[in-house]
Length: 129
Image (cartoon, rainbow, N blue to C red; front, side, top):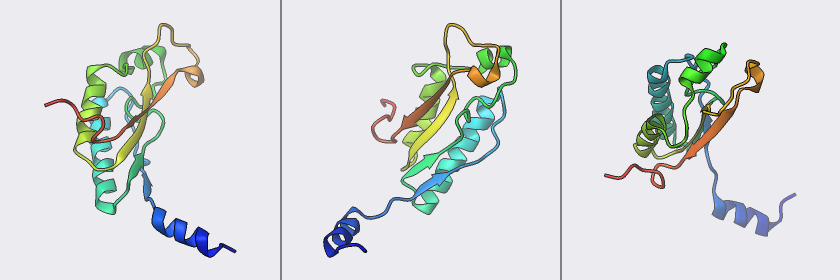
């Protein structure tokens, strides 16, 4: 049973709503995936979510060949990531989303391809105007 002090502390801290978007990502189709990413953030805003999460390779999809993985992969400082930040800047929630990453060598075994989780807060990472 909670003490009165614990109940007061929980009341002060409040509750946080976290949403997860289990949309289907299309391998190699960044435009489609970015549109769904923004749709998920809009839904998060509408429901008052503070954090919206997406699957591990949502931005790039789940490529089944090394060629597709290399073609779709991008780095944190890339124009593709800038677009992700521009989308998150328009929404209130923090986004947690992943993609395949650019590295020197990508294994030919799909389960060992590198993925990167990317977290962006709308105000902290807003692109400069």
